[in-house]
Amino acid sequence: MATDGLAHQVRGRKEILLFPPEDLPLLEYRARPKGVMRYEYPDRFTRVPLSAEARATKVLFAASINMTHPDRPRKRALEQCSPLRCTLQPGETLLLPAYWHHEVYSHPAEPDGEGLNVAVNFWFRNESAPPAYYA
Image (tube, rainbow, N blue to C red):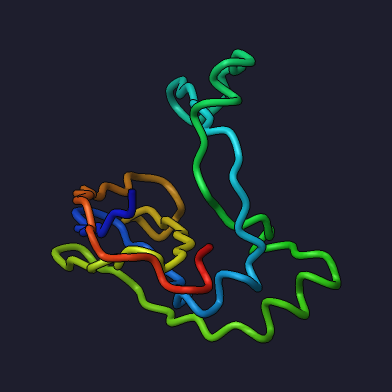
């Protein structure tokens, strides 16, 4: 099932890279287990271990490239991509279309790096067929 999304920025800002569906083969999309993160205040995230059943049945499709530190072959693949870059400011909303890969970098409201970054996302089903390169 594909989903479209709306991202609404409340506080802080987000830098977003949107990759069109034609770039998906270059991003090495693969099925992988859908993980669960646990948050502990003020800034600790840990992965919850998945059971064998969850690893086999709860999957998502995602890029396999580290966007901020790609190795040499993947860096060459990224250079062939044509992402759109935008900055979402408080009060702005962005449509995230189905089949468009997105990378999000959050920045707090205060310039010293302290403070909050708050956004609200709404996802809804897209009934259209996936593009040919998605398969």
